[in-house]
Length: 513
Image: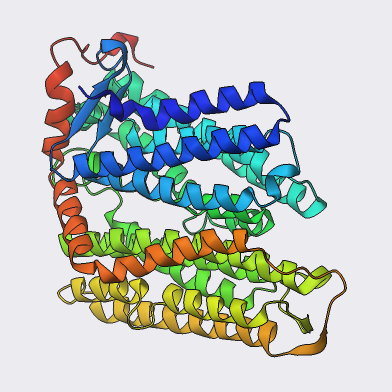
């Protein structure tokens, strides 16, 4: 049992605790936080390589077997998500170190707590601990969202808190019902016990499962539960919004995991429970996200709606249902996370270069470093909407090809192409307003972006470029990840096989709620 598997959770937790003790010693806090994030990136790379061997690793904390102990599971999907988190995190942190982290006392501690929650959600093999890690990352995100204060930011945070607390309450109800009926919250054991549940329990199990899917839909910003995201993400500071780009992927990851383990089979009481409605909902999310981007009044709001549209694209690809479409969904998820983070950072630099008018989509003063910013937005926008020779183009091509045998192929193709066209119009409108419809003078309060602000954007755009250069091996990885998720029995054997002898069975009926 390799202890490396627990480090993506323990390292940020210990770092955050140390940073709390450091207080306002900003220079030392920056060094500690950045070194910890760099180590996290190295750990993420190693775990990704380990997962690519195809073996599913488990880590039983304290040698306590499930369901009493915490089991961490590393497979291809969780390894990919941990690596993606560490890449986005180090870029967002470096950007924050250019000035945002001076606006409060505990930015770096909160940032590390959020990394702990995100990595824990990706690695845990236990439903209750998934709830716990959700709460950890949400509490940190509440604080990071209001970081720097401001009325708009505070109003968005209240909305965000109410929605997510509602989701947490529903999550807890669903978890309680499942535990009462099955006697376990270990996800692999749940898959086995739910599949063989008694007929009397079917209605409750299906209700609890639908509650959990609704919660994951809130986290992922899926229609009709997406309305919190544009306001929250567009109100957050740039580095926080960039880190938030990975947060919606946690909801998507949870849907993938539950569909693969519990809802994806052809037998059992929850088999294919999401199939009838997941694709229509994903399609509506894609179209409404695109229309929201078209109607946006600020660049940050436009990018937030593009993030919503990307959720629709990923889940529509996933709901096509074959291995190739799932591979395309994973490729698109990596691409959209990187480019969304880069666009959030770019949007703030544009706002800074325009002065008090910020990144509002209206005629304004001349922009400092306008040529460089214009080229960066042009490249990032082309990647985001999927113009040829970009990672977005390759991802959409994979999804389009995977849908050729689907009975809904004409509709899927139409929506993907239409969403791309709407995104193109929205970004073109924003670009022409920001860079062409300007006066001939700079605003008095405008500032040129610093070299340090450019570096994380170049890093993220470079990562997106590498997805094109190494498209074939990366596609092979997403193909293998999709194949592993299509064979959930291997995950169940890797987890339950080690714990079945000591694990308790389901509660007696007289003790159930």
